[in-house]
Length: 548
Image 1 (tube, rainbow, N blue to C red):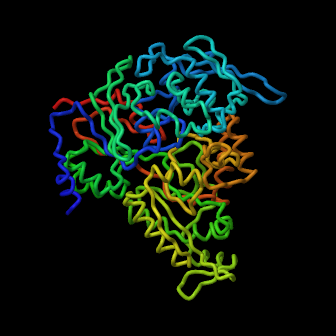
Image 2 (cartoon, rainbow, N blue to C red):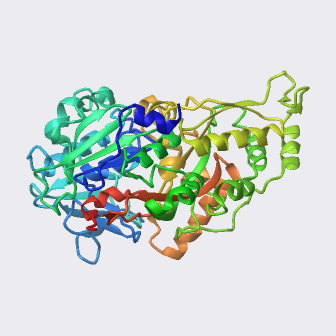
Image 3 (tube, rainbow, N blue to C red):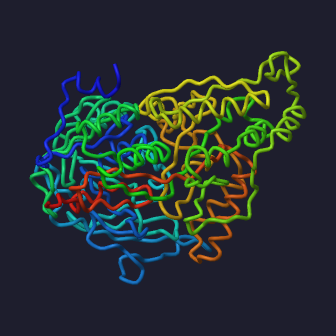
């Protein structure tokens, strides 16, 4: 039975063209948790974009803006005040005001008790919340009123007003779940009671969850902003892109999220076949496709092997054949679109001969079946993982497997659903090589992914994002300087230093900077891709049904 036939056999009928009270969105991932601070995943950010209001985010113009706060603090408006906290060291005190009409979807007001509770959870190393450095950096918080508070930071950073990762947790719901901080990851009500209205403060709230399948959202009746445009939104996780296309063509879903939908090659093919039936938006951005290498793995700890793996890939050929050259090859983790980008770094063009020489030098010699062996008879073999069901990544794995075999490296493919890969395998570093994407904000300091104290472990509740176990004191020092450099030109030099270190050390293998494709119904307007880590759904109230 074809995928299309299977869709209809399951009893899914096309949605009537006139019925736009419900918007059904297709994605290729299901979030491992809905807790805003645990397990960073694009799938979770996409859903919570409709159900939660961060204090600050970057918009489509790549400028910081307030969502939950009333005014973006600045030194000029007096809401941010640099202070001397030690000889030669400056901190900053920043005052935020919560929107006076902000409410949780159970009617409880959003207030500073939620701020203090979120701070308590984030400061506890056992809680499993990410962005541990941000919570460490906030030395204290002074409550001025139910809606106003001042954060005291131990550093004056160039992006001081942005507290994007400080997403509030509802104290009146979550405090019992935090009774044992070490169990918070599993006891959080976002995991045990995800349809509790009190967990959400955005224009929508989660009303139903079918784990691994779909999440339904309905309007928050206590929302006081622009009215939600749909009576119901269903986000369906269809972790096979062929089935995703079949559901779109059948009408079982209305649109495919650009943030987590078709890869560019699939989208280009789809547009050639069916593009006249939909709105198509292409958005280049800061999404960095790469392969993390587990440096705990003794073989991958050898830089000769990492460089050989890099030289063994023909990324230019892959870009031409899969993406029509529209997805630029990455040489570091910083996109050419970003202010911090530099070209003055090591570049790795395909060179299988040089790769072979490096492996010979490292003691790996070609065996009788073409796979290299060391003097102890160990095979040069690695396990490669990615998100199961992503057709392009699975195809790319096969290409990489073939290209690396040419230099004598054996690759075994073992893929997992995204919620397993990102929720368990990666933070516990139970992998050799893992292919996925970082989605970044503009000038996003790479502390969480490269700083040596951001390595996930039991002591920090497996909350860091340095899944590669990368440790380089030089990188740590550059990151420390980068964060506090207010002069843009001097900061650019530090960005260049960070990129050179990355391209030299190769804790991961850079592949491409992604172009996302949004496939939308013709009757929908107002969807504005950002090109950065903040999803279109944060502006869901701007989405509208176009009248025929």
